[in-house]
Image (cartoon, rainbow, N blue to C red; front, side):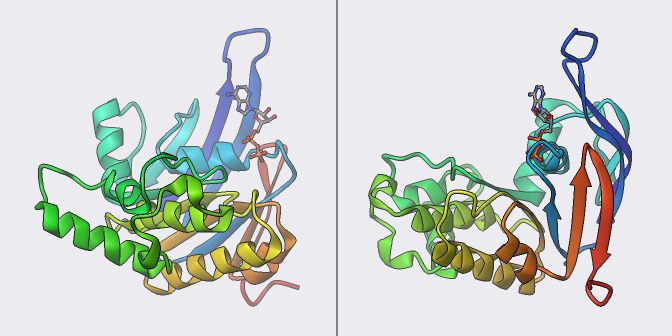
Length: 230
Ligand code: ADP
């Protein structure tokens, strides 16, 4: 469960270029939900997702994930939360380009805690779940954008996180590849993983009608759940 209460995010606090990117955001996202976060460029979508993903801090309010208050935590503790609970997918894939698919997916696995053969099995299973197991040994720089995003999703889920956060995952993809990525995210959600996706893409909003949160100027201006969507 994710609970944000009156979250305020201020960039460059105390400087002339101080900017309030999130004003007073309160939200609850239950386990297993599929949520699309939409809004114009600059609305605060990435900022919100980065806070939920524990990769950015906030100035005021409270963020609680699974009963852990994410405030003033050490970098070590934050990394621990990210590694055990959160998979992250970015618009630009953020893969190591000259590594193969499987090498990229192996990266987040704990080398100390798991045997090499187990790690390989987990990585192949994650690649299989996104339809990329046949290309495990191919270098990422030989893949199309859609294939790269599939590998990025495999890397995000290989540790079995209960939460997947995808920031504009189809932003660099054509409509066909975008639809495939949406279907994969939907399948991941159907396996019980909470999925939070930010998007500009209207096709994606139509596809993810279960819950759509609209941000504008750093505020939640609409929060519509399935059944109430016009
Ligand atoms: P979105 O994802 O909806 O496009 P962002 O969360 O990226 O919006 O940005 C929200 C606002 O915060 C924008 O006006 C952006 O310019 C500003 N912003 C984002 N990151 C920073 C930063 N590191 N420093 C200063 N301002 C930032």
